Amino acid sequence: MDSIPLSTLFITLVICLILSAYFSGSETGLLSLNKYRLRFLAEQGNKGAQKAEKLLEKPDTLLSFILIFNNLVNISASAIATMIGMRLYGDAGVAIATGLLTFAMLVFSEIFPKTVAAMHPEKVGLFSSHILSLLLKVFYPLVWLMNIFTKTLMRMVGLKLDMQKQVISREELRSIVSEAGEATPDEQHPQMLLSILDMETVTVDDIMVPRNEIAGIDIDDDWKAIMRQLNHAPHNRIVLYKGSLDEQVLGILRVREAFRLLLEKNEFTKETLLRAVDEVYFIPEGTPLKTQLANFRTKKERIGLVVDEYGDIKGLVTLEDILEEIVGDFTTSTAPTIEQEVVQQSDGSMIIEGSANLRDLNKMFGWELDTEDARTFNGLILEHLEDIPDEGTVCEINGLRITILEVSDNMIKQAKVEKLAS
Image 1 (cartoon, rainbow, N blue to C red):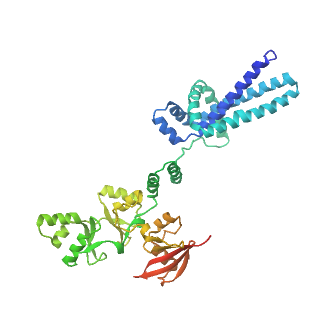
Image 2: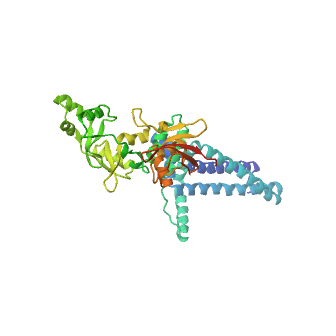
Image 3: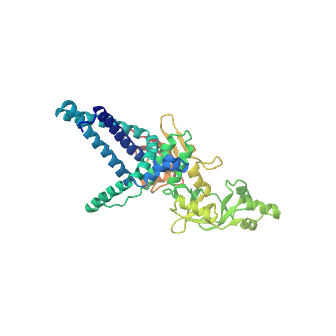
C-alpha cells in the first residue's frame, strides 16, 4: 500500500465521496417521488419514470442495493483517508483524517445531495433510475443474498415480511385535491372534486326540499286553480295528490306531457291530467347521495319522494338537486340560494332566514353547526331551545348570539346572528 502514490489515493478518495453522494441523493430522490405523478409520466412513455416505477415496486430490494454500495464506498473512503493521514502526519494523522472525512462526508456526501434530491426529486430520481436499473441487474445476486440474510433475521425476531400496499384515504385525497386547486386559477373544478368526495357522507335528507315546501297540485281543486298552477309550475315535474300529501299521492305529473295531450285531444280534463302521471318513486331517508345518484341512473328516474321508516313523506329530491351539490347552483333554479337567505348588516351581524340550510351556512362562514339532528337554521334553534321561542328571545349556539326576529306558523322565519368574541 505504501507504493501507491498520494495523488492516486486522493483521486480515489474524491471518487468515493462522489459515489457516496450519488447513492445518498438517489435514495432520497427516488423515495421522494410523487407516485401519482410518476405513474402519469410512465404512462406518457417517459423511460426514466418507467424504470423508477419498476424499482419502487420492490423498495426492499432497492434499499438493500443502495445501502450495500453506499456503505461499501464509505468504508473504502474511511480506509483511504486513514492511509493518507498516516503518511502525512503519522499516528496523529488518523485522528485528523477521521475528523476531516466526517465533515466532508456529512456535507458533500449526505446533507448536500439529499437536500438537492428532496428539492428536485423528479430530476434526481428519474436520472438515477437509468444507472441504478443497470447496476441492479449486474449485482442482483449479491443483493438477493443480502436479502436472504435480512429476511431470515426478521423471521427470527418475529417481524412480518409482507409489504403493505399503501391505500390513499379520503382525507388524504382531499388534501391532494386542495393542493392541486391552489396551483390552478380556476377554483371551480377542485371544488367539484371535493363535492364528489363528500357525496358518501351527505344524504338525501341534507338536500331534499322539505315536505312543507313541496310544490304540488291537488286533483280536488277547481279546474281554474289547477290550470293556474300548471301555467306557473316551477319545474317540468310536480307532485299530483288528492286531498293532501298525507292522504294520497297519485304520482309525478309531467307538465309537458299534460300540455301535449291537451294539444292532441283539444280538451283538457282531470282524466287527461291523470294520464300524464308517472308512478311515484320513493327514496328511503338517509340514503347517501352517491347511492341515490346511481339509483336514479339505474331506474331511469329524475325525481323521488323521501319517506321515513313509517312511510310518511319527508321531502322531495331531484336529479338536479344532486348535480347542484357537485357543480353548484344552476342559474335556472327557482329555489332561494344561501346568499339570498343571508343579509349582511353594517354592524357585522347578519339576518338569516329560518329555512337556510345548515350545511350551506357551515360552508359559507366556516362554522361548525351540528347537522346531525337538524337540517335548517330553524331546526337547529328549536333543537337547542326545546321549545318554540317568542320574538326577541336570545340564545347562544357554538359561539353565535342568536336573536329571534320573526316567528310564524310554529317556525322561526328570521333571526339575527352575531359572532361572539373568542
